[in-house]
Structure formats: C-alpha cells, structure tokens
Image 1 (cartoon, one colour):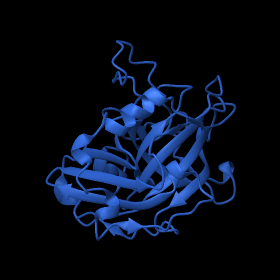
Image 2 (cartoon, one colour):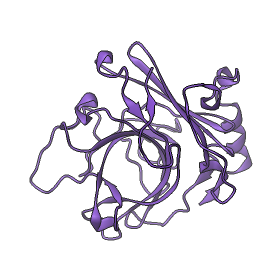
Image 3 (cartoon, rainbow, N blue to C red):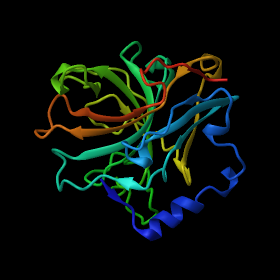
Length: 249
C-alpha cells in the first residue's frame, strides 16, 4: 500500500462538507461497531458500519480509525498480480436485486482503488476526458462473492463466469468474466468516513436486509485466469465474524 499525496489528502478531507454534521456511522446507535485495533492499518481499521434507507436510496457508511481512502495499492505494472484495496458492505440481498443472476452468492457493495486497470468504462472519474485511466480513483462496484478454495483455504473470490456461460448481468456490467457491476455511485470521504449512496429499482425488497462492514485486499490472478479476483487479505470485519448483524432501516 502507499499513501495518497498531500494534495489528494486535502481533497479527501474536504470532499464532503455536508457530512461534517455528526452523521457518521459511529454516531448511529444501530451501527455495527468494532473496537479500534492498533495492529491494523488505520485507514482500514473499522470502528463502525451503517446502512440507512430513504425510499429508493440506501446510504452505506463506514467509520475508520484513520483517514479513509488515504491508502491506495502499490502498482504492480500489469493486470496479472494487480492489487485492489476495498471498503466492502456484504449484504443478505439476493444478487438479482441489482441485476445479477439470482442465488449466486453474497451480494456486496464495494468501494475500490486499483492503479493497474480501469473497470468503469462508462465513467470518467477524474474528468480528464479519458474514461479508461481512472482505476486509482476510488469508485463503486456491486460484486457477488463466493467461497473459492482455489484462492486459498476458506477464501472468497468475486464469482467467475465460466467460458461459454452467459448468466444475467446488470446493464452496467463492465464486460469482465466475473460477477461485477460498475454502477457509477461515487464514494465520498470525510476524514475517517467513507459514504456511498446507491439507488434501487425495487425499494420494498431492501428494507430489513442484513449487512456488515469489511475492509480487504484483493488480487488479480497472476495468469489472469479463473479465479480472476481473489480476496487475499481481510484487514477488519465490523462484526468480527461476518454474521451480518446490521439491518437496513
């Protein structure tokens, strides 16, 4: 991992002035909370995770023990072996809720950074007119996670799409052979807080769904083959056991 330059840190600190009102995850009485742990990277040491529904919109929040978004992966120089850092909210929602083939794994919202590739072809995160060079910028994904022994004992991976199979994918699927969506919901940062607000087509399916908070590192397989994207390190889990104790209210 490497730290963002001071100019970028300044952007992180002032990106969301509207959030500087005590509405962080740590302030919510029904948040999933976790004790600070000095052995973990501070930017990924979770203090609280929260999700709140307002009609079709759900706001996912996470409070960290450091400056959220301040650490990004060290570039590998190629897609094979590329590192991904992420803030993740696993949910109990069926993947079909956001357009994936149903009953295929754990639907999770993720905010990620990965300097070696850009998987948001419809969006120009840095506004420079080139939508293909933005992987370092924090951006959002829906992913479907499944236990994948090929990634290691008990490890998770983003679900692969085997050759020749055409499972249902969301309209903003970026075309990679994995269960990933690039919906364009912008992660916002406010000091220790990261927030992502997402929209759902069927809000009645969302109320009461369970969630958790996770910070993790993933890595693209060195031979860019199945499994394509493995979870290789979990920094913190808000519930400690991935029991999804939070309820979207």
